[in-house]
Image (cartoon, rainbow, N blue to C red; front, top):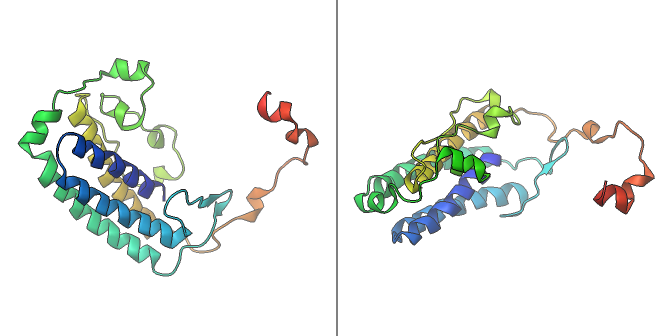
Length: 208
């Protein structure tokens, strides 16, 4: 779910980005793939956006029958879509003329401005919280941090394209190793301490 959301987010960036530089055709291709991701979300959670799926100790509901196969089919299809983007966009000389060397942000500037994510990694900073902080179960998968050193609009585009491909790799590995058993662990929801009435106090919740 996390990596599907990442892909959907990058597609939401990529479509309007292409429209802004005068490339209307890729916009429709890009949002076609984004809708397929929302279909997967809806099938699993009943919601296309803001699906509130994760819970302490697990998830809200088990995946429906056939969802994993449907998601794997999407992964195979989306890789061909990325190849299509490369053909339509990345190797297009008009596109390159409009984004290469434009909006350059150096690594030091990116850090000083508090940039993160693809914006930071496109400026030569190889910082990805999933690797640095050993976030969630990402250490169990084979994937690489995507980064560029030029810091221009083209670099930010290339980082996102690369990240979508890496996300597919992570999803495929995760689905192949998804465990059986219950989808939630009610034991981890228990507090180690007894309830304290002050937790509901205004001062405790909003000031302290």
